[in-house]
Length: 279
Image 1 (cartoon, one colour):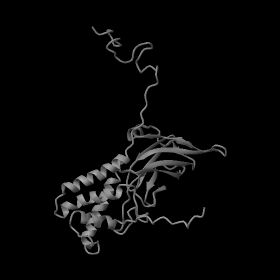
Image 2 (image 1 turned 135 degrees about the horizontal axis):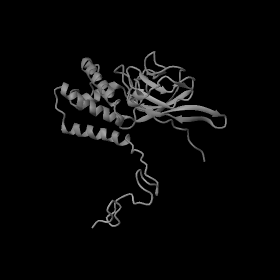
Image 3 (image 1 turned 120 degrees about the vertical axis):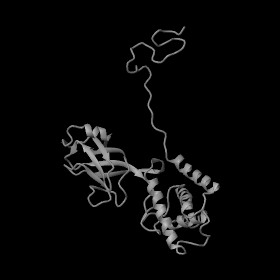
């Protein structure tokens, strides 16, 4: 059966920061449809700063993390801490993006053999109390087992322990969040980005920005705007947070402090606590 020529898909929508700011000002009635940043350059720049305040805030919250990047970096032997961030001093560059808010997971990459390939050896993520109580911080090994991340600024500090003495690779799981912007004409996917964001973000950013612009524009936040902005943020929250993994004790395994053959939980009929069955 003959087929017609293939039809190319329509080009994706491409939004800039200017688009979001313009729509936010229209939403609160400060601008009219047809106006844009060129008609109100000073007000537009104020809106641009408010927009960056908003994305900076969202980037700090897990609820607005839309995905997780598993980035691979090469360890520098004998260096502690390794720096990760945008500066020229960083051992692990983030290519201009801010340093990670937190590290979700870390693994040492071991190339076992041609048949097996690369094996991820998970590292223990530690906190500041563990690092402070570590009495031998500078011991070295080719297989670091633990990581304490201190989110210093502008570069975060990665304390691998023991300190690596070989140039192996590590895989770090970090947050993917809304980027900061350098120009009002930047695409909303970040400077040099695609001009798109995950579903729900464009609407959520625009309506939340509109709320933020009301006070400085001497306008009240209408009930309809507040409700629409809340629903837009809830849509993002609902997609991002995941139920935590939980584990239960295998059947028949005694709990800590429980003697073999005793009943673990109190039952009104059989007792199970000192004194036996209730009277």
